[in-house]
Amino acid sequence: MRTMSTQESTVWANGSMSIRVRVIVNDGVSSRELNDLVGHDWIKSVSYSDSIEDTLATANIKCFSHLGNYALSPWMSTSSINSSPNDIL
Image 1 (cartoon, one colour):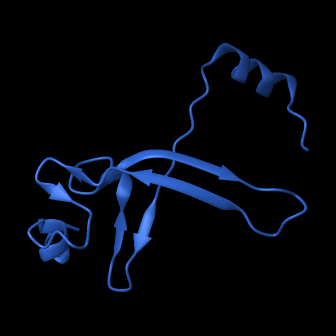
Image 2 (cartoon, one colour; image 1 turned 180 degrees about the vertical axis):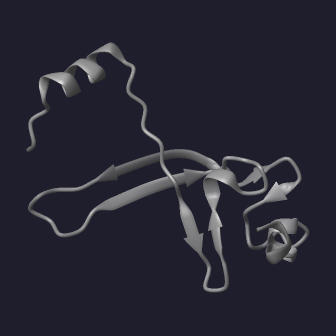
């Protein structure tokens, strides 16, 4: 495990640290950035883990299924995200 420097420890201790993520999903046709899709941040939470011993890191991303008149579900054909994805990107 990597040890934190004194400066890093101070930042964590005073609570002024924030972490931002960028989630891009490629559906084979186009790429969509979920943290700014049609003006909304669709990301509910992100957790990740990695290890020096493993060559693979894992991430779990929870998203909102719908916001306003938009829905991410592929079964919601009436959502403009699904009916005309190229018009909103």
